[in-house]
Image (cartoon, rainbow, N blue to C red; front, side, top):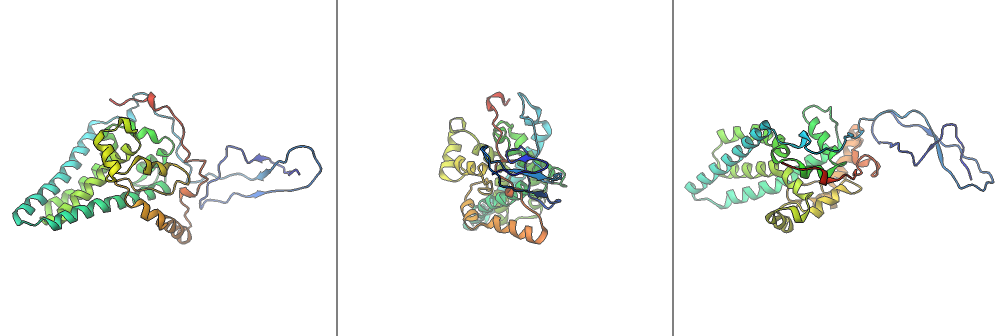
Length: 302
């Protein structure tokens, strides 16, 4: 059997077809059955493929001493600022708890903050992994970074500490500082301090989840094994097809619940039917999100 067309584009071509709401890809397949000794072939006649907004960012692998992986003084300033606002929340809460002799409510509030930080990290991670692009207002830089992270996930382990955390630290500063100045409730302050602190450091927890056990601090490995921090094996599943699970990067405690109940899949279907927007996780798994194998040993941190 042979299949004949005017413009032949084999399915093994390096072209990738991305589902999205942009102009549709039109194709016609002409079939004819003839007697032949040659192997069967399938070819597709195609019209012009229009560029899509979900084209993944293509970056060259970082080189030795790449400045994009290094911390600047501005990064360090924002990190100190974020840490300071979190510590003020926790310190004010502790002082008030000691003076009022109430421990149960603030402790419970801190635990709730920790659990909700994991949920928030998953929702946010799902959103910027699947929607938007580098040109999206406000979130474009983080969207580009997270979507590009799927191509070279090991580079996060080479980012210096303040470089990795400064963006979240800046957000924490602006959100938490007014609360520190205006609020004296120890329960609420403990919740805010714990939740914002976990969110701010979630990118470091994320980096540790990409680390090898032999290179991680023993305390980090213990916390990962206890499920207090997201584990390497759990987050590793996020970087394997179909790339639509294990989004939470604080403790990962919500991952099983969200994935088993197909919460994100339901949200994706809702957005698609309501707005006509398709998530990037619907893309052919072996295209834009497949990992490019690099040599992490070529990179160093200073």
